Every structure is written in C-alpha cells, then in structure tokens.
Image 1 (cartoon, rainbow, N blue to C red):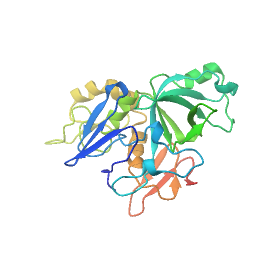
Image 2: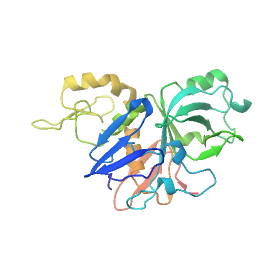
Image 3: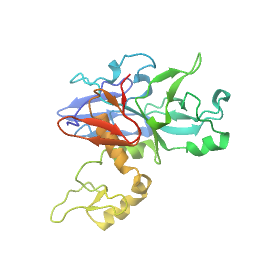
Image 4: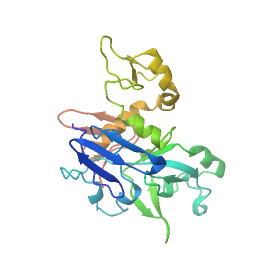
Length: 261
C-alpha cells in the first residue's frame, strides 16, 4: 500500500514539486510541508464532499491514479448547537480547515435525543470531529450541513492543528517529539499506549502535554490515517476501525462492515 497519493480537493491549494507535497490551509494559519503525502492532510473540506443521495465523487478521486479512497471529514468543534430545529438531536457547529462553519447532526433517524446540557457535554469546544464518508445534506431551505450516524463519528480530544500534526507521525519509526530515528539503541514506547516512540526520556516528557490528549486514541488515529490512503472497494467501515493489510486489503469494524451504497 502506498501513502503517496494526492487528492483533487476544492478550496485547498495543493502543489507537487520534485516529489514534495505542499499543503496550505488557512485555519489558524496552518501551513505544512511533507516529503510524502502522509497523515490527514488529504481529508476533504466541506465544499468538496459529495451531496447526500448523489453519486458524484469527482472531488474525492485521486488526481494521479483516478482512485477513490476511503474518506473522512475532519473539522474542529466551535460550539454545541442548542436544540437544532427543536428535535433535540445531538448537534454542533464545526469549522473545516478552510474556515467554513456549518452544522453537524447525529443520528438523523431521531433514535437518540439529548437535552441542552447533555449536548454541551457531548461536543466539547475545540475538540476535533472526524466523520467517515461524510456527505452534504440540505438541512433546510437555506442551510447545508452534515447528517451522520453516530458510529461513523469519532471525537478526538484535541484541536484540529494538533491532530493534523500527530497524524503525520503515526506508523513511522521516529521519535514523536524530535523526529529522530533509532541509532545505537532502539526507540522506546509510551508505557500507556505502547504505540508512540521516543528516543529519550527527555523527549517523552516534553511531548507528554500533547500526547496525553491522544494517548488512548492513538491506535484509532493510526488506523484512520491508513484508511484514508486506502482505495475504497466494496466495504465501508465505522469507528473503531480495524485494518488488515495484505494481498487483499480488507476494512472491517468492531461495529459493522457495510456495503457501499
């Protein structure tokens, strides 16, 4: 499986120069350069998502190989929405990496209802919302947003900028703090998650303020990174994601694996 893909995404400036992928975004002034297309940089913005009940995936197709990968929409929670349309559905306002703000509703079949205070606790401000196979929906005559089943949604307890940065480190044999690689002695692992790597105790201590937010979810983040760089064949998945890579790539879930509609 190759990680070096490039998505033709609207409202996102992407340039490839001598094998170096440059991704510029305006959210919080983020600007990143990566020697390979790694992490969640390729996740689409809201306006490039396909519309609900339509099969137009042209904005998500790999511009190099014409491949449609699994996709995940990433946005930062601005605030919980207070009783959207009086339905008491779990809902919030999010902002994508282009700075576009919109509404997200969970479980549009209305099987789950929350009061105002439960909704506020469910969507902490400045946490990051990840939605698998997100599509744009017309919420009313003037407002577009996203409606999604809760099993396709994961809330990471960190900001958009933090999860973008940490996603570039997953699956790589280098120190999560300084980026150094093992020389005379192997890298040590975080004692809690057994996943994050460090070249020294000093590096682990300096990175803990950031890593502690994702320590419990770092393996899910790693699987999510692999997923968005994997071609979408027949199966869709849900959170938590389990991946098995071999001659035949399979995407499964502890919740369900459903055929692409």
